[in-house]
Length: 187
Picture 1 (spheres, rainbow, N blue to C red):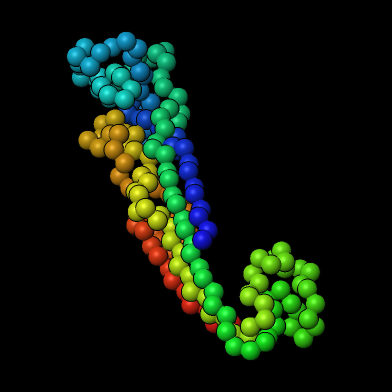
Picture 2: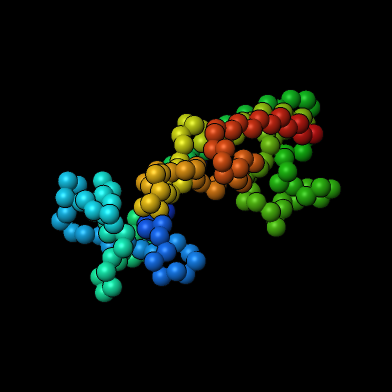
């Protein structure tokens, strides 16, 4: 059995106003965060209250400090991988696994460490059954939330995160548990 645990802190993301006051063609202006303004006092045409942060001014006056790039942090990601395998050996005497060079009987010098992939010594045939899974607990790890303050989805993740699933044959939008099984016969 081989467990594999991956834990990542949240990915930073930008908070923007969704407005283009400078007429640049790209609505990515940054808001100003008003210190000490409670939710009830955050009222006005250009003010938006976000519970996790406070009161934002979407159109801050010239010279007012705005929030920096990557101001917020997305949710952490957790992924547990697991591989379980068992080998059965049978038959008469045979070579002792793949750690020998074919025809020479000597140890390999440019391969994995000795014993890492060896098969049970003394038996001619081996059957290995294994199963491998990523996201073994089927836990969803979300992408950074929507950072546009003018969006009704502000603060909500709109997708699933974690690129490790792509190496496992999935896609970034299908972060469900996936189990691969394998049967290997060696002789």
